Length: 258
Image (tube, rainbow, N blue to C red; front, side):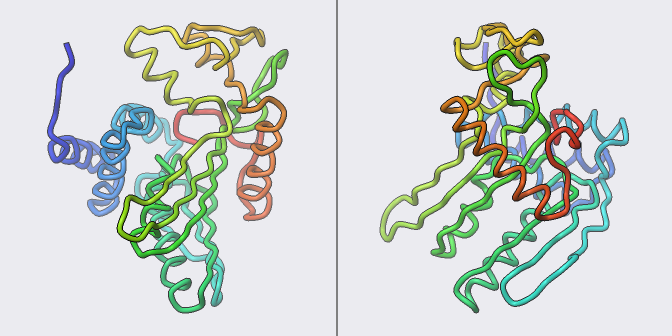
């Protein structure tokens, strides 16, 4: 039987857990609100289900809960932020705020963030800009999780893309999608519910198609549109990793929080 919680209770729970893990109070609030926002939008793969994995990452020393986030480079149109190996929610929010501020003054702006872990639902950041009546595009690279049929290991991340368009007097248009057929978090949701996944989502460790979410978690996801989606994932990896001086491809450790 499903158990229901009020959003504010979930936010409070997440915030308190993150504070106990060592995150500053303000950071904990931003992260928790972002997770619950994902649940409210129906994106449970990027919601509070992630908290246990973030906890595991902190305990293993793979996530820095108390980072020294800094601006590496800044000019009129561009900002580059270093996240000091923390979860991406706070540095990505800072980068978005910088981009919005500069775009208001100069008409256009680009922000980049490197050296960070999972940033959650990418739509959250374009929604910030849309609320200011701005068009926004966001991309992110991730640890290797995508492969083509026959591959024995993933070589590139799900590398999502989000675009937001404000619409006068109506609901904004928000697109948020991974370069895989589904986000990897949906495997986690299916596993926790004990449900099979559809054919065409993923491969097992041997590069064979599977409907078992647990085999898929150990294996790899398939890209949207075959080689075309794979190519887009590679392009995003180059932009977010190589261009910004961050991790990319097999240089990113595979995990649920990177």
